[in-house]
Length: 298
Image (cartoon, helix red, strand yellow):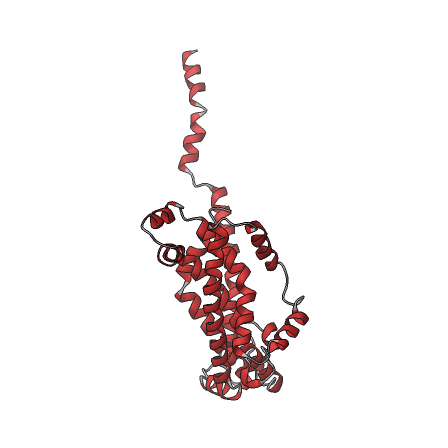
């Protein structure tokens, strides 16, 4: 009887010991599914870029005979030819001017605005924040006609500084919301200590707060750069003269005029995509830090 009780008491622990000694099949299956999904997303993301790169290095005849595979021989002269035919030099310069001016204006205006709606107590602050969030919900296509008429009346048509101002205004709501989250994540004691030392609001913003929200600034700059550099809609609406057109307009004009030269078109696409990839690679640490921080408080 005693032996039977001892044997019965030992039975519940036996499966647990066996489970500890065997691999968790269910966990391994879930992990395999996760890696499979990531591999599919990675292939879906990278293969179009690789396909464009392959096409930019092929000869004109190989584009037809070898559509999806890598090139059999490398033709780097396609890049120089595409740069010359598409007039990429002037359009790249225009895009750089517009993007740089818009980003500078965006940071200069959005930073104090985000600081004000997150730290200052003033009447109507909730209404201002609601308007900022509501502005994010309005698609630019809805505002096309009013925007064109306003830009025409202000003399901003075919103007690089004019479209830079419009780009900064279009990216302003999202930038304010992003940086507001970072400002709210900082303790108020930092400002109190700076005010005790005699610092003004502007000095607190510049010397205390800004160094601590650098991931948020990097996030705003990356989002703004990608959006402005690749924008076609506003550029098509406001830039009519070829001398002031940016890269997306130049690519469309090049394709319409030389639609059969796919190898050169792919080379032009590679040239215009390279700055975006370089910016992201150089700032990926700040980008990831900005995505994983800042939104601590609402």
